[in-house]
Image (cartoon, rainbow, N blue to C red):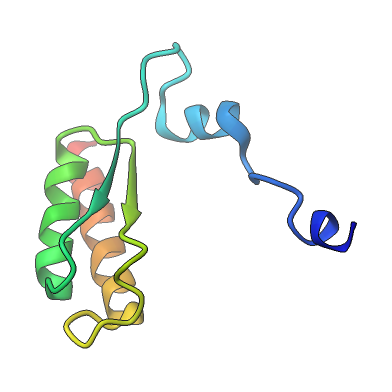
Length: 92
């Protein structure tokens, strides 16, 4: 019960996720994991930008990345978030 109280489930649910990405009409969602391990934050950001401009709905960090020497977590998150924001702004 303690675990269920601490982790009640997805915050948005599928309906909320569809609203967030503009896919309320029922089209399939497109998701991708950024790979491979070993890329720099700039390289990962470049991939994220390309995926965003291509219309990918969800970009997932590769769980194997953790805090790699080539891409520390905080650096990676900042770079990828900036790239996604810029690509979305450019797309309107």
